Length: 149
Length: 396
Ligand code: SF4
Ligand code: SF4
Image (cartoon, rainbow over all chains, first blue to last red; front, side, top):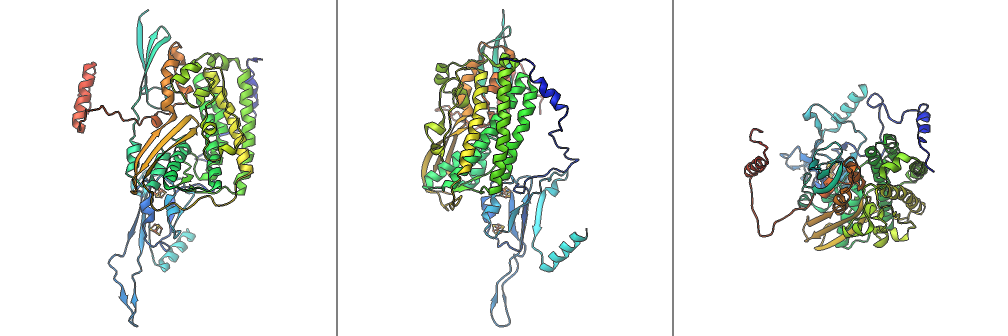
């Protein structure tokens, strides 16, 4: 039953096969559309409930209010206009384990997983993802600028 | 002939993780072996007590990179037992799917490592190439190749879509064909036999006496499998065989693992063909009541046991993990004895060890308690090694 050198047929076949490996980083690697990589934050949807912070296993995410000094205003008709609280999200990518628990915890859908996995950097300070609330007009200008690029 | 002691590890090219094996040699033959662990202690159990139940799921998942789903499922089941949660059938089925994919991935990984230790690097390359199919399937299902994070208290976090479902079935066909090819190769290739037959013998009685578990025990002819003996999730509704071998050597362990891949493929086809309809998770309770629970799970390496105690607070009061490798280490010194030094890496690899999973025992000498500062410990360490003739005083 033993057939020595039977694996040599495999060797010959391999001369005519294409490589199983990919040429990364020269060829772009793709990940599945379900892949959990960098978390993205949409400040317009966030209400600052801090649930994402509470359940983050790596203590990586911070949601900070950027306008804590703002006081409720009294409108012309005597109605109190509550403060429009604005937030900033900071995710420390050196701590984040990309578990996406924060995405599950957020009932406002302000956080989402992206497929952006190439996060390596030689500069430590660039390893913090910061996204701040900006006025809608500012947001629009930003996106236009991006498009131009 | 004079006997000499050769230390294998803690850092050694043949070991993938730190562990120390003191081998007493007479010529090339190992006459005695002692094992020392503890180089990889990470304090995970204690760290879990400082996190809430949800956070701890991700921590426990990181007990092991290869059997991450096993540990997480074991922990989550405990918490669900304490909270009295009944999880949906679909969630159970999805847990089985991930669990079996993980088993295939782990066994293919082991096959590669074992082939590499044998010196059969072609097989190593092949099995790791084919492992990519499982990794891709896991990535598509869960969102990550290694830490799937599929479990949550109350079910699973993602559903299996129709397309993903068909994709897995296609990948399983390829894997089945490849596994059959390896079996064909293993029965024909005499070098493989020469390197594995009779190596690292562990007779049945000795395996039972030393409390071996998983593929190591099954390769010694004992049909023990938690999936059959104490079915969890939906294993009681599935048709599969417990693979055993009477070879009691490394070849037997090879045989058991390779055929277990085929059984896992069979299980996956059954589960995927009638995946129960309905929700895949129930709401995670806000508060976990006081209570305790123990769960057993058949991880790729053997029986995994977790204990969780809750005291009604936000964090677990105690988490205990018994990884399968800890049970199997008992047998290693027996298996090494009487074999050649060159076979030592293969014998150690044959239990599919996971040192960092295992390193979590805290030994508390009864009656003796002391608190030491880092400085005191350093002085103690220097003195300890000085007695052995090594001077560390100059190392800063
Ligand atoms: S992905 Fe996980 S670790 Fe990262 S910020 Fe979200 S919860 Fe924290
Ligand atoms: S859970 Fe969502 S809404 Fe709440 S603070 Fe976090 S991002 Fe904002």
